[in-house]
Length: 189
Image (cartoon, rainbow, N blue to C red):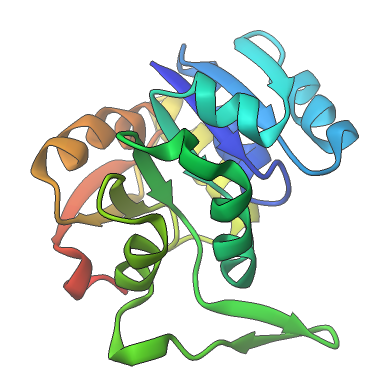
């Protein structure tokens, strides 16, 4: 499957690497082109490339939005209509960095985080929430162990579009995890 990754930092780089090793065609992108190029180089051996966020969104059958939660609306706006009709994976949590301390961000209107992200994306985008329950440094370690035949860690996923959820399950499993259906976006954590 073609996977576009928007954001090649602490979360996007290891996740893209796991998917590339599993045989998926991955396009890394970032607002800093050198970061996307470094992520692609670290994933060498798989089908990888790097480009701009718009190129990654155009490229991917599935697009992973590996950006800070607070940056999500601005990134979606920059991508314009490139996400229309696509399956988008949201691995973000409503957390930000305030003076070196991880701080929770209030989600507006009493929504869960992915319900808010779906609102930002609009109705034409098929959102699945996953890859958000492990710290980025754990993601590569646990995924690599699972890919290598070791114990697989659970990876829950949530969504309101059953077809999108079904399409994302193989990505979760190929990344070395056991996919666990958590229900709809209203039940997401």
